[in-house]
Amino acid sequence: MLDKIRVIFLILISVLICNALVGCGFQPRLSGDVPSCLRSIYIDSSQFCDPLIIQLRKTLQALTVHITKQKETALVILRIIDIHWKPLIPNILYSNGTTSYIYLLSVDFDLETRNGKILIGPKNITLQRHLIQNISQVYTPNANQLMKKEMVEAMVSLIYRVLIVYGGKIK
Image (cartoon, rainbow, N blue to C red; front, side, top):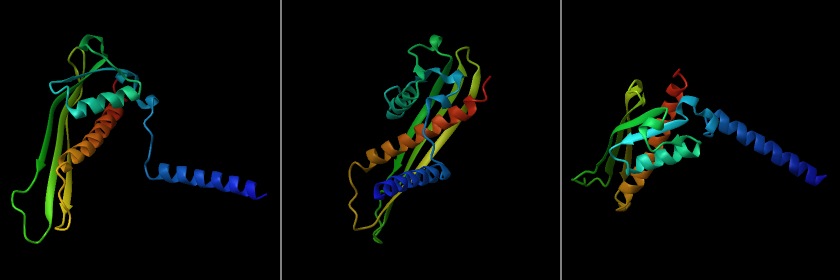
């Protein structure tokens, strides 16, 4: 009897957690979300070794999008025009004990057919993050890399959302 109650309780808790996640906007990325016109894509960028490009490739491949090696074989071309990373670290530290660091990541991109017809863009997405530390916190030397990694992941997610939303409208 106690085992039945425990099983029912676990099932009930699992259902409640799933409903709470969906209610707060959580949605897993599924390969079925990717429109058919985006199933074969070429990523064109002069900064092909940038962490953002690498992360974008991995994310799209995980969603079963075929990343082509040549423009001619792709249905569409995602052209990353510019990636701009700028950590604004203050030169002067104030005596009140707090220091504010500002990080900016900006990406310009467009989506076009292999014939050059622009489907999306050019678009600009800019992320800004703040890091405030008081006097008792020690600034870690790798804070820039950690913040950039976090912002790259967020930027890839935003680019993915733009592609999904606008890609669904492409005929």
